[in-house]
Amino acid sequence: MIPEIGNIALTLALVVSILLAIYPLWGAQRQHEALMASAKPLAVGLFTLTLIAYVCLTYSFVTDDFSVAYVAQHSNSKLPIYYKITAVWGGHEGSFLLWVLMLSVWTVAVAIFSRGIPLAMVARVLSVLGMVSIGFYLFMLLTSNPFNSMLPFFPVDGRDLNPLLQDFGMIIHPPMLYMGYVGFSVAFAFAVSALISGQLDSTWARWSRPWVISAWSVFNRRHCTWQLVGILRAWLGRLVVLGPS
Image (cartoon, rainbow, N blue to C red):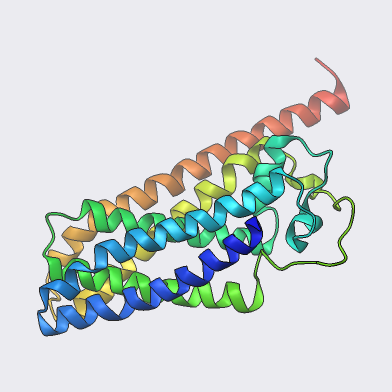
Protein backbone atom coordinates (compact mmCIF):
# COMPACT_ATOMS: atom_id res chain seq x y z
CA MET A 1 0.00 0.00 0.00
CA ILE A 2 2.77 2.46 0.90
CA PRO A 3 4.62 2.07 -2.45
CA GLU A 4 1.33 2.67 -4.27
CA ILE A 5 0.83 5.89 -2.31
CA GLY A 6 4.34 6.97 -3.31
CA ASN A 7 3.62 6.23 -6.96
CA ILE A 8 0.37 8.18 -6.85
CA ALA A 9 2.16 11.09 -5.17
CA LEU A 10 4.76 11.15 -7.95
CA THR A 11 2.04 11.13 -10.61
CA LEU A 12 0.21 13.98 -8.89
CA ALA A 13 3.51 15.86 -8.60
CA LEU A 14 3.84 15.65 -12.39
CA VAL A 15 0.34 17.08 -12.78
CA VAL A 16 1.12 19.92 -10.35
CA SER A 17 4.40 20.70 -12.16
CA ILE A 18 2.46 21.01 -15.44
CA LEU A 19 0.01 23.41 -13.79
CA LEU A 20 2.94 25.35 -12.29
CA ALA A 21 4.56 25.65 -15.71
CA ILE A 22 1.39 26.99 -17.37
CA TYR A 23 -0.86 29.06 -15.11
CA PRO A 24 1.57 31.50 -13.42
CA LEU A 25 3.34 32.25 -16.72
CA TRP A 26 0.01 32.79 -18.43
CA GLY A 27 -1.00 35.10 -15.60
CA ALA A 28 2.26 37.06 -15.86
CA GLN A 29 1.77 37.56 -19.58
CA ARG A 30 -1.83 38.72 -19.09
CA GLN A 31 -1.14 40.58 -15.80
CA HIS A 32 -3.75 38.37 -14.11
CA GLU A 33 -2.96 38.60 -10.41
CA ALA A 34 -4.92 35.51 -9.33
CA LEU A 35 -3.10 33.29 -11.81
CA MET A 36 0.27 34.72 -10.79
CA ALA A 37 -0.58 34.17 -7.12
CA SER A 38 -1.33 30.51 -7.84
CA ALA A 39 2.41 29.88 -8.29
CA LYS A 40 3.12 29.77 -4.55
CA PRO A 41 0.47 27.20 -3.52
CA LEU A 42 1.37 25.09 -6.54
CA ALA A 43 5.04 25.16 -5.50
CA VAL A 44 4.09 24.11 -1.97
CA GLY A 45 1.93 21.32 -3.38
CA LEU A 46 4.77 20.12 -5.60
CA PHE A 47 7.14 19.95 -2.64
CA THR A 48 4.58 18.21 -0.42
CA LEU A 49 3.79 15.49 -2.98
CA THR A 50 7.46 14.86 -3.72
CA LEU A 51 8.23 14.64 -0.01
CA ILE A 52 5.40 12.12 0.43
CA ALA A 53 6.86 9.99 -2.37
CA TYR A 54 10.33 10.17 -0.82
CA VAL A 55 9.03 9.23 2.64
CA CYS A 56 7.13 6.30 1.14
CA LEU A 57 10.28 4.97 -0.53
CA THR A 58 12.28 5.44 2.68
CA TYR A 59 9.58 3.58 4.61
CA SER A 60 9.79 0.73 2.11
CA PHE A 61 13.54 0.44 2.73
CA VAL A 62 13.25 0.64 6.51
CA THR A 63 10.51 -2.02 6.64
CA ASP A 64 12.29 -4.33 4.13
CA ASP A 65 9.49 -4.23 1.56
CA PHE A 66 11.16 -6.41 -1.08
CA SER A 67 8.04 -6.37 -3.24
CA VAL A 68 9.47 -3.06 -4.51
CA ALA A 69 12.08 -3.92 -7.13
CA TYR A 70 14.34 -1.01 -6.23
CA VAL A 71 14.39 -2.00 -2.54
CA ALA A 72 15.18 -5.62 -3.41
CA GLN A 73 18.09 -4.52 -5.59
CA HIS A 74 19.72 -2.13 -3.11
CA SER A 75 19.02 -3.39 0.42
CA ASN A 76 18.60 -6.47 2.60
CA SER A 77 17.25 -7.30 6.03
CA LYS A 78 20.71 -7.34 7.66
CA LEU A 79 21.64 -3.82 6.58
CA PRO A 80 21.95 -1.32 9.47
CA ILE A 81 19.09 1.14 9.69
CA TYR A 82 21.21 4.16 8.76
CA TYR A 83 22.38 2.44 5.58
CA LYS A 84 18.80 1.46 4.77
CA ILE A 85 17.88 5.15 4.90
CA THR A 86 20.82 6.17 2.71
CA ALA A 87 20.21 3.23 0.35
CA VAL A 88 17.24 5.28 -0.88
CA TRP A 89 19.73 7.11 -3.13
CA GLY A 90 22.00 4.09 -3.59
CA GLY A 91 20.83 3.49 -7.17
CA HIS A 92 19.67 5.37 -10.24
CA GLU A 93 15.94 5.51 -9.49
CA GLY A 94 16.33 6.65 -5.89
CA SER A 95 18.97 9.20 -6.84
CA PHE A 96 16.50 10.64 -9.32
CA LEU A 97 13.86 10.89 -6.60
CA LEU A 98 16.35 12.66 -4.33
CA TRP A 99 17.16 15.01 -7.22
CA VAL A 100 13.51 16.03 -7.77
CA LEU A 101 13.05 16.38 -4.01
CA MET A 102 15.92 18.87 -3.91
CA LEU A 103 14.45 20.66 -6.93
CA SER A 104 11.09 20.96 -5.16
CA VAL A 105 12.87 22.27 -2.04
CA TRP A 106 14.49 25.07 -4.05
CA THR A 107 11.18 25.76 -5.80
CA VAL A 108 9.21 26.15 -2.59
CA ALA A 109 12.06 28.20 -1.08
CA VAL A 110 11.81 30.68 -3.97
CA ALA A 111 8.04 30.81 -3.46
CA ILE A 112 8.35 31.55 0.26
CA PHE A 113 11.41 33.80 0.46
CA SER A 114 10.96 36.06 -2.60
CA ARG A 115 8.69 38.60 -1.00
CA GLY A 116 10.70 41.60 -2.18
CA ILE A 117 10.53 40.54 -5.83
CA PRO A 118 7.59 41.62 -8.04
CA LEU A 119 4.82 39.02 -8.27
CA ALA A 120 5.13 38.75 -12.05
CA MET A 121 8.83 37.90 -11.82
CA VAL A 122 8.27 35.30 -9.11
CA ALA A 123 5.48 33.76 -11.19
CA ARG A 124 7.77 33.47 -14.22
CA VAL A 125 10.63 32.02 -12.18
CA LEU A 126 8.40 29.39 -10.59
CA SER A 127 6.91 28.56 -13.98
CA VAL A 128 10.36 27.94 -15.42
CA LEU A 129 11.20 25.71 -12.46
CA GLY A 130 7.92 23.91 -13.12
CA MET A 131 8.99 23.33 -16.73
CA VAL A 132 12.30 21.90 -15.55
CA SER A 133 10.44 19.67 -13.11
CA ILE A 134 8.16 18.27 -15.82
CA GLY A 135 11.11 16.70 -17.63
CA PHE A 136 12.44 15.03 -14.49
CA TYR A 137 9.08 13.68 -13.35
CA LEU A 138 8.25 12.37 -16.82
CA PHE A 139 11.62 10.64 -17.14
CA MET A 140 11.30 9.08 -13.69
CA LEU A 141 7.73 7.85 -14.13
CA LEU A 142 8.31 6.49 -17.64
CA THR A 143 11.81 4.99 -17.41
CA SER A 144 13.14 5.08 -13.81
CA ASN A 145 10.25 4.60 -11.41
CA PRO A 146 11.56 3.65 -7.94
CA PHE A 147 8.16 2.16 -7.03
CA ASN A 148 8.06 -0.55 -9.71
CA SER A 149 6.59 -3.67 -8.11
CA MET A 150 7.80 -7.29 -8.25
CA LEU A 151 4.43 -8.69 -7.18
CA PRO A 152 3.28 -11.44 -7.11
CA PHE A 153 6.77 -12.99 -7.11
CA PHE A 154 9.37 -11.20 -4.99
CA PRO A 155 12.50 -12.34 -3.11
CA VAL A 156 12.59 -13.19 0.58
CA ASP A 157 15.64 -10.93 1.00
CA GLY A 158 17.39 -8.27 -1.03
CA ARG A 159 20.74 -8.17 -2.81
CA ASP A 160 22.38 -5.68 -0.43
CA LEU A 161 23.66 -2.16 -0.89
CA ASN A 162 26.81 -1.69 -2.96
CA PRO A 163 29.70 -2.08 -0.46
CA LEU A 164 31.36 1.04 -1.86
CA LEU A 165 28.33 3.03 -0.71
CA GLN A 166 28.40 1.66 2.84
CA ASP A 167 30.45 4.57 4.10
CA PHE A 168 29.75 7.58 6.30
CA GLY A 169 30.76 9.87 3.45
CA MET A 170 27.94 8.53 1.29
CA ILE A 171 25.44 9.50 3.99
CA ILE A 172 26.20 13.21 3.65
CA HIS A 173 27.79 13.47 0.21
CA PRO A 174 24.85 12.91 -2.23
CA PRO A 175 22.34 15.24 -0.50
CA MET A 176 24.90 18.07 -0.38
CA LEU A 177 26.00 17.40 -3.96
CA TYR A 178 22.45 17.41 -5.30
CA MET A 179 21.40 20.40 -3.23
CA GLY A 180 24.28 22.38 -4.73
CA TYR A 181 23.82 21.21 -8.31
CA VAL A 182 20.04 21.68 -8.36
CA GLY A 183 20.30 25.07 -6.68
CA PHE A 184 21.81 26.56 -9.82
CA SER A 185 18.54 25.84 -11.62
CA VAL A 186 17.15 28.84 -9.73
CA ALA A 187 19.71 31.12 -11.42
CA PHE A 188 18.73 29.55 -14.76
CA ALA A 189 15.06 30.23 -14.00
CA PHE A 190 15.77 33.89 -13.20
CA ALA A 191 17.75 34.29 -16.43
CA VAL A 192 15.02 32.73 -18.57
CA SER A 193 12.36 34.80 -16.79
CA ALA A 194 14.31 37.97 -17.56
CA LEU A 195 14.45 36.96 -21.23
CA ILE A 196 10.71 36.28 -21.28
CA SER A 197 9.88 39.61 -19.66
CA GLY A 198 12.40 41.56 -21.74
CA GLN A 199 13.97 43.07 -18.58
CA LEU A 200 17.60 42.40 -19.44
CA ASP A 201 19.15 44.93 -17.06
CA SER A 202 21.05 44.05 -13.89
CA THR A 203 17.90 43.82 -11.78
CA TRP A 204 17.31 40.12 -12.37
CA ALA A 205 20.94 39.37 -11.51
CA ARG A 206 20.54 41.22 -8.20
CA TRP A 207 17.40 39.22 -7.43
CA SER A 208 19.11 35.92 -8.25
CA ARG A 209 22.37 36.65 -6.40
CA PRO A 210 21.26 35.30 -2.97
CA TRP A 211 20.11 32.05 -4.57
CA VAL A 212 23.34 31.60 -6.51
CA ILE A 213 25.40 32.26 -3.37
CA SER A 214 23.27 29.77 -1.40
CA ALA A 215 23.72 27.04 -4.03
CA TRP A 216 27.44 27.75 -4.33
CA SER A 217 27.86 27.63 -0.53
CA VAL A 218 26.22 24.21 -0.27
CA PHE A 219 28.24 22.93 -3.21
CA ASN A 220 31.48 24.27 -1.75
CA ARG A 221 30.79 22.67 1.65
CA ARG A 222 30.24 19.40 -0.17
CA HIS A 223 33.72 19.65 -1.75
CA CYS A 224 35.34 20.42 1.61
CA THR A 225 33.50 17.54 3.31
CA TRP A 226 34.44 15.08 0.57
CA GLN A 227 38.09 16.13 0.78
CA LEU A 228 38.06 15.47 4.54
CA VAL A 229 36.49 12.06 3.94
CA GLY A 230 39.20 11.31 1.35
CA ILE A 231 41.95 12.29 3.78
CA LEU A 232 40.39 10.11 6.50
CA ARG A 233 40.17 7.14 4.13
CA ALA A 234 43.82 7.55 3.11
CA TRP A 235 44.90 7.73 6.75
CA LEU A 236 42.89 4.65 7.68
CA GLY A 237 44.25 2.78 4.67
CA ARG A 238 47.80 3.62 5.68
CA LEU A 239 47.06 2.56 9.25
CA VAL A 240 45.69 -0.81 8.11
CA VAL A 241 48.55 -1.53 5.67
CA LEU A 242 51.56 -0.12 7.55
CA GLY A 243 50.30 -0.10 11.11
CA PRO A 244 50.79 2.75 13.58
CA SER A 245 54.08 4.55 13.09
